[in-house]
Structures are given as structure tokens and as C-alpha cells.
Amino acid sequence: MRRRLILGNWKMHKTVSEAEATVQDLLDRMKDYRGPYEWGIAPPFTAISALRTLREGTSMLLGAQNCHPEPQGAFTGEISVTMLQDLGVDFVIVGHSERRHIFGEDDAFIARKVRAVLDHGMTPVLCIGERLEEREQGHTEAVVKHQLLGSLAHVSPEEIPRVVLAYEPVWAIGTGKTATPETAQEVHAFIRTVLRDLGADAEEVTILYGGSVKPENVTNLTRMPDIDGALVGGASLQSQSFAHIINAAFPNA
Ligand code: 13P
Image 1 (cartoon, rainbow, N blue to C red):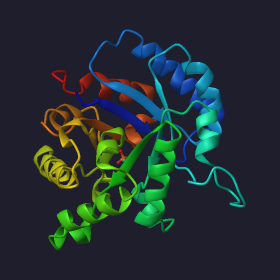
Image 2 (image 1 turned 180 degrees about the vertical axis):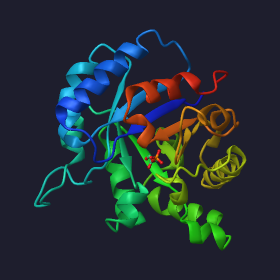
Image 3 (image 1 turned 60 degrees about the horizontal axis):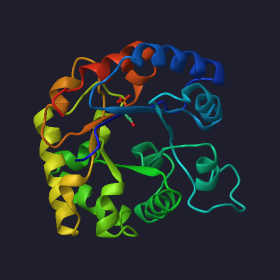
Image 4 (image 1 turned 90 degrees about the vertical axis):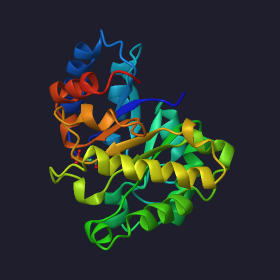
């Protein structure tokens, strides 16, 4: 059975004390949650250590938003997978569209990160997704396939189920324009065919949807057979809305 996950990506938001206050409130709200979804937060690097202490003994997963694939070295400003492992991080977001498009990361670099995260016993949350013009030109499947093949280049078919995928259409991120459940489902199903062609047990792979997920739309998205949860940006910044999303995710997992 594949994992069901609701993960928050805080991006570049919250000081340490703000992060602590939000997570404390979130833990209070989630303490009686018995639903089928695992849940977690990827705060900025600066708040990971403080949140590690707070989440001890709880079911909250702790994530990072990026990493460098090398264990150490002359890479000013970077954070290595070894450092994240040392902080007790469970999952690492790699290849987010903001990393790809604002910071110029390519599939070859992202593939090294995926490998490094796996090698250090953490879960890579690999983001893929097309831009608006690519969708309008009918290139969605080609773009997604290209990203998948490139980013999974160093992962064997047997290991692919250890990678969590997040389909995040770039045009839906932070825009309030969610993909319809049907549009997202179509791409998620396509992703499984690509994984199958790679030789992986595609039914075992968790595929999240991301892009303007809100309490109001999460039920219908996660109701879809190939959507196994959500990667949530803006609506994860407030404990109330994030707890609402986790509780509203389709229950019959
Ligand atoms: P929003 O939920 O703010 O659209 O962000 C989605 C995202 O980029 C999560 O990684």
C-alpha cells in the first residue's frame, strides 16, 4: 500500500519563533487525528532544529525544502544531505519549480539530489510540473516525462517507490488557480504509466498534487484514484487551514 501524505512547504516564511508557535498550535489541533494520511512540514532550514524538539513523540514529519548532494565541501551557502540527516529530517523536497525556474536547477543536478537523499535514509519529494505555455502548446506529458526520466536517472526501478512524487503544475502554484481534479488525475495517471515503463511497481509510488490546495478543494482532489495527498504552500502557513486540509482529505484511503 502506498503512503498517503499531506505535506506543507513553508518556502521562505517564518522566523524560528513564528515557526514554533504555528507548529505548537498545529500539534494541538492534530493530537486526536486518526486518519489515513501522514502529515508534515518543511520549514526554512533555520527552523528545523527548533521544530525537531517540538515534534518529538508526535506523528509530525519534518522536512527540508532543498539540499546539496555532496556531503560537505566548498559550496558557500548550501546545506548538505548529511547535515539534514543529522537534524532528524524525514523528507527533502527536491526539484521544486521555484528551484528549477528561479535558481536554474536542471534535471541532472536534481537527479544527484534524489540519489543523495535516498542514500542518507530520507525520503525525496521530487517535484515535477509544466509551465502554462507548455500546457497551452500541448506539451504537458512530454515535459513531465522528460523531468521524470532526468530526475530519476540514478534511481533503480526497485527503489522508485521510495521516492515521493509531487505533480505541481507551475501555473497553479501561488496563483489560486488549482488544476481541476480531472486535469490533475489525468497527469497523475500518465506519471504512473511512465513509472511502469521504467520498470517500477507504479502502484506503490505515492504521487502528491501541489498548486493552490485549500481546505475547500482538497477533498475532491484526493478523491481521485491516483492522487495520494497534497503538497501545500500558502495554505500550510496557518495551523488552522493546514489542519483543516489534513482533516478534509478524502478519508477512504
Ligand atoms: P501554493 O499552495 O501556495 O500554490 O504552493 C504550492 C507549492 O509550491 C508547494 O510546494
